[in-house]
Image 1 (spheres, rainbow, N blue to C red):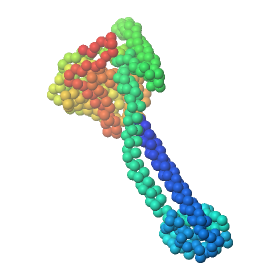
Image 2 (cartoon, one colour):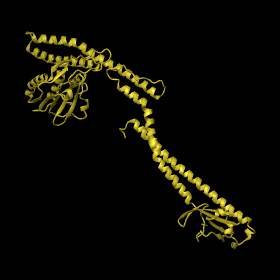
Image 3 (tube, helix red, strand yellow):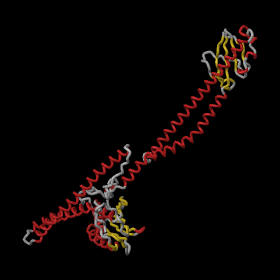
Image 4 (cartoon, one colour):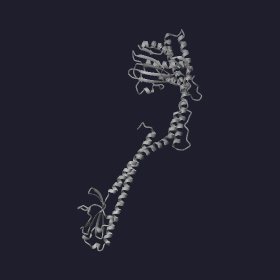
Length: 463
């Protein structure tokens, strides 16, 4: 139930509450109705007993007559068929109707109106006194019990219908109640990095939903400001770093080409130049990512043969893999035409291949394959080596995140982020297919035709 949608949870809880209320109401109604019927039944017994006493009183010499005088003529018509027992002041039996058992109706210690089982029947017995006489009047409760059973059956038969109505009604109420929340969800889902300036419409009603939307819009305002500041900082920092890095690189290269530079200084200068190249790469990567965040990646959509590009990558890869004892395998079609930015696609493949080399096992293998299922071009790059930990796999495309914590392997954690953003800018995708003890495999999917990617206002269209 934890994974149920909120509307189903609300409907379930409302239906459950309706079920409990229905059963409790039916039980209470049945108990009240039965109590009312028994009370009316007791009143009828009292009326019948009073009629008996009136007949005795008005019978000529009735109160002075002995037991022989108490015959059927004393029993009024209303008590015909009832269980009747009359006793004198000393408890002597004066009259007992034929349907009363020998044990009699008087049970010492029982309160008035007890219910006893006589000859397999439930009998309600009332005790009344008048002028020294005591009358025990009993009546069969089968009719009352039959009515109670019928009422109970009717309620039980009605419960499924009530439950069905409650369930449907609860579902409708939950849907109506959550309709504004669903509208908020859909509107919020439409706000992406490319349209952070959009806001959720605030309803005119000053209720909790309107207050929630205002809070969410205020959160989007802060998010937009933070995001724009982050993009601006990355772009400005990368842009301003390019000039001093270029000057520094030019100075170091001049030192290296100067014949008067001592050999020891040249060695140091070569190391510095290597670090400058790293700085240049980081600055360019940060600038590229900042443009991707702003939707300003400039792509040139040209038609070219992806298989030819991959064959060139494989040739360079074999040259790099041979000193490490790695094997390179390729499964490429003769021709695979795509319309994309050749340099951007080459950079994606280059980053995947560099990772396949760096994180490969000794004497391992790198496999590159390509195909065109469903009209899209697919390129897979896989390598042997230590698998990516499952808890780190979801974060491998995040910036400056490294799937393995081995500091001896060079890198800044930007290669996969750049490849991912470039693939998305093409309308494609880059994903990790598997990473186990046998293979770590990435798949790049590119549309064979250019796909329009939504850009924010003011952004430069790709193409």
